[in-house]
Length: 154
Image (cartoon, rainbow, N blue to C red):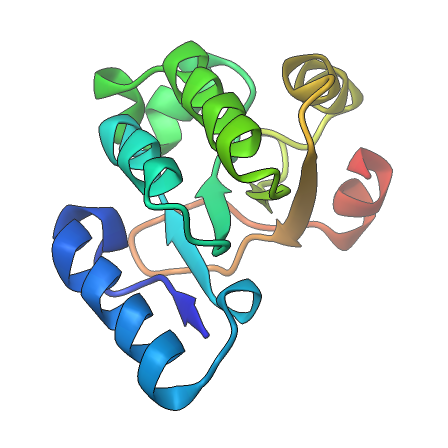
């Protein structure tokens, strides 16, 4: 079960926490089969880590610099990458769980070899997995994906 899309789960922290508990306690779905995906609401990553639930955390990262991430994700202006990664390190330390970082590969924006090297440097030593997905075209966004550049990135 994955909490993501159609709204930020950590913007409704108590409701998500309650739903996770009900899914676990009443449906018998194990904590490790539950995932919460966030854009990076840093204070709630700390709160989530302190719940002592073995739920997987997924973070939409999409860039390894504040300049690029800020252009792609306005939330980065409130919680820049350094604060986000510090909170993610805390989560891993508290839970001993691996974090999944989501990376929508956008041709010419975040898919270069230099971007991959910056990402590797940023996440060095952090127990994590990076899920690189070619971006899905959407109305109002000019970015597009290239399978070839996504393969090179990985």
